[in-house]
Structures are given as C-alpha cells and as structure tokens.
Image (cartoon, rainbow, N blue to C red):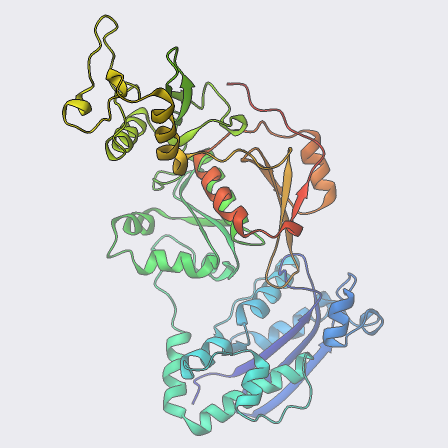
Length: 475
C-alpha cells in the first residue's frame, strides 16, 4: 500500500536530550519490494550511560565499550535510510537524534517521517494510551522483548502490518494526512522547519535583518510555529509573519516556566515589531498608601523608575501608565463609596470644607466633610485595595527555582531575586558564576505576574535558597 520503501527505526540513547545525549543502539526493520530485512548495532556513545538507563535498556557501559562509534556506521546507516519513509514511535525523538549525530559529522540527513504515536491516535481516538507497551497489548502483537532497538523497531513493523491487513483504507488515509508537508512561507528553508524540536522553549522569527520580528513560546515549538503558517490567511499578524520571515532560531527549556521567563526577557530586550504583549514600558507605576496630616491613608502614585518595586512592601496595583492607574483607582472609589478627595482624585479646598463630587451624588460616606472618621475610611480603603496589593517578596533573598523536563534528562535553575529574573543556568558551576557577577535586578510587571502565579504550583523541594543576596538596581 505504500509508494516507497519503509524503514522502521528505533534508538536507545543515554538520555532524552537530542543535543547533549548520544545513541547507544540502532535498530532498523526495512520493508520494501524485495521483502523485509533487519539490521542493528550497538553504538559507543563516547560518554557514560547513566545507571537508570542501563537498568531500563539492559545496555551497559561494558557492552558498548568495543562497539563502533556513530561516525563509523554513519555511511552505511545513511545508505539504509536515505530516500525511504522513516517510521518511528515518537518519531521526532529518533529523527532528531539521528539528525544531530549526522550534523556532528557535517552530514545532512533528511527524510519523510511518520510517527506511530500520531498514527495510533488518529486511528484509535477513543483510546487513552498510545505508548508502545499499550499498542503491543491492544493489538496482541507477538513481541517478546522491549527497550532494545531492534525489538522495538520490529514491534512497529508488526503494528503497521496488522493495520494494513485489517483496515487498509483507513491506514492509507491516515498516512497520507500525517506525512503531508506543511505549507511554508515563500522565503523560509524547509530544512529549518524540519529541525524544529517538539519540546518546550522559545522561538525567534527573523526577517531580513538581525533583529527578530516576532518572539513566541510553546510547550511544542514545532507545532506552534507551524500553526503560525497555517493561520496566515485568517489573521493579519500571522500573514505579516509569513510574508517577512526568513529564518527561525530557538531555545529549548526544561519546562514552561523557563519558556515564559525567556520569552518575557527577549521581548523586552529585543522589542520585536510584531509583539505587542510583554514589551518594556517605562511608565510602570503603582499606588502607595501614605498617611496625611489629618490621619487619612491616601494613595500616591509612585514609579518604578524612582523606586525598586521588588523591595517595596506597600504597593497596590501595577500599571503600565498613569492614566490606567488613575482610571482603575476611580472605579475602585466609585464601587466602594470612597471619598474622592481623601483618595487624592479631587483637590481639597483648604480654606473651606467642601464635599467631594461623589458625596453630592450620595456615593461618598462623608469623609470629606467630617461625617466619616479617618479610621473607618482607612479600613474601607485597605479592604478595597487588598486584592490589588503587590505581594512582598516571600524569601530572605535570592532563590533558584528548579525545573526538570518530562523525561528528567534536563534540569534548569531559574535565579530570582525580589521578583526580578536574573537568568537561567543548568549546573552548580554556572550558578556560582552567575551569583559572582549577577546582572542588576530590574522589576518587571509581566515577570512579577507570571512568577506570582507560577510559585503557587512550585514544590518547596524545587526552591533553592541562595546565600548571596543581590542589591537592587539604582533608580
């Protein structure tokens, strides 16, 4: 039913990172006009295999010590794979590993790819699990070994052969849909898109110059980028991206928090023309309650350029402009029948006791004319503003938030001080280097909001208190 030779491929590796881990075993089952053939080999990864990987696969460091390196098998392997439909389970994982291995040798490897996870989901949408163990059990495939490359590749071949016998039309339709090439912008190299990882991270789209036109984040970089191009006819911004994009760069992260922090930082640093959210705003301000001579708590507008907001404990709001702050405060005063004079929203006549405009409309309880005591008005002000209070930094100093990817193969440490993002490192040495010469903290409204939200879900075991505190930025 297939128009070309198929290779069912499975790899065993030292871990889950296509850039830092290496291949330990390759298994290939080839199905074509001349029948079915099998090929496999252990690979010396030229790095240590972690103990938990040894236990999972049964492949030990001793077993691969005398095995060929990838460079030694690369010519034969390229000949086996080139020009054939590449079928694998979680295909981007295996395909990405092979592309990176070939790239280290300055060799290009490209192939049409079919993922059996997506194939199973397409044909069996009501099933919850689509990992290889579940597929083997669901279809009663005669597999007597797991987590070895050739055995797993053989399981994929058995799966597809059974589908071909039992529902050939549905299989043919699903394969055609899953291998269909996405429509790409006219000036973008298809190979760049093929290299996009299906992992969490941030992507930058560039036009004809060195500054990005758009920065985005996703838990699946490849999927999100392709969505931009699929929607270009319906959305003005997406159309501009498709017309202007010439190249794409990306940063992989261990998880969503790292992607969010990196996206916010890059947008503020690089100011991409097609990003409206998260751009730096020099007018960031907040309300700070100050006591007047006659005992009333009155909001005063303060600016981030004058005070370091991360070190303040008496702030309410966080606004991008003076106008936004004043409009919000006026709404709060109106809803809670607070005095416009005592809230600083109207000027008081020092020579004559004059009611505020809201009192004349019976929307003020009389703090302006002495009918409401300062203590009572103050209580109502504090209550009305309580939901808008900026949370004080809950730690004694600098912290690192530990984040791991789903496979546990990558760990990032996000260094935060008084709601200010200082950077992300991956190991203790890099952490010490960052703390030795840290960047100046700069409070940012978007970073505060995402950290305030995300910290609620971070386990205490993943928060590392750092001994060195970082001084706030001047001004």
